[in-house]
Structures are given as C-alpha cells and as structure tokens.
Length: 208
Image 1 (spheres, one colour):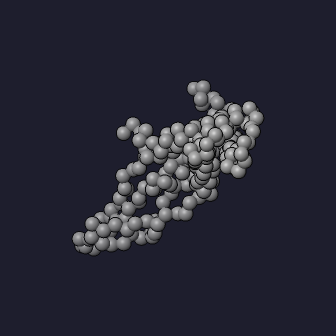
Image 2: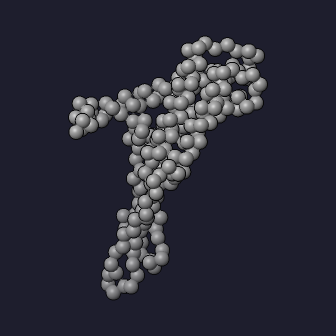
Image 3: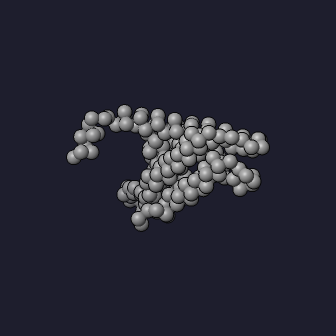
C-alpha cells in the first residue's frame, strides 16, 4: 500500500529521470576522480591526494560497482523458445512455423543495467517476415533482431567506464610499488565488485 502511494506521488518518469541523473553523475565523478588519480600515480613519483578525494574515490568505486552488479542481477532469465505452428492446408502434410529466440546473455544483462539506471531499453525481437515459410517440422526460420537501442548503448558505455577505470586502478596497485592509498583502495574495491558482477552476469545468483 505504501509503495503504491509513493508511486502515485512520484511518477515513474520522474523517478527514472532522477535515477538516471544521479547514476550518470556518479559515473562521471568516478571516471574523473579515480581516472585522474590513476594517471598521476603512473606518471608522478609521489602524488599527494586530499582526504576528501580518498573518501570520494572509495565511495564512488563501491557505488558504481554495486550499480553494475545490481543491473546484471535485474536481467530477465532466458525463456524457452516460443514456437507458433500453423495447421496444414489444402491436404499438405508439411507444417509452417517460425521461432522467436530469447535475447543473448550480453544483451539481457545490458538491458537489465539500462533499466536499473532509469532508461527504457527495448528487447522486442523483429521477425524476418510476417509470412512463415513452409518446410518440414524440423526446420526453423530464425528471426532477425533489432539493433541495440540507445538505452543499451548507454548501459554499455557505463559498464565500459566502470571496467576500464577500475582495472586500470587495479593494475597500478599490483605493478606500481608504493601506489597511493586512493588507487590501492579503489583497485581492490573494483576487484570485489567485478567478481560480484560476474556472478550476476552469468546468472549464478539466480534461485534456479
């Protein structure tokens, strides 16, 4: 009841817009603060960072990683292939049919991430033809897929920022002796969140 009242007070469009705005701001700050720290750590001998940058990098590393993991966990599980059969006409023994295949693993996870951050992804498969082809029951006509939507591309960009900046911090942590605390902490936080994201990506956290 309380959730229904909250949804009436705050329309879905506003909630999605707010979620998208906050998520993108966090990603930009994450790339700016931690990316700057990684570059300075690789180029400078003894870079100095303020305590506020240290706290912000740790917070943003956990936040962005959690969003990616939760977005992958939000992806819909694969469904059985849906078949449509037509009865033989004109005395023919052949049956015409076509199949609607579920989206790929990568697409499902990106759709889940896009939905979580407040976008409206599309997963509708596009059939190749409205007229099914005739053939033996063992044959299927694979449908064409619509191209990735803008929402899914944004989700892919979000993941790319998270992965590239995080793995850079982790590599600097491993290979650079005496790396600054801001990079070390963020690198290990990234490692933890990327493992969690991998479990979610593969569906290993599902209850099936």
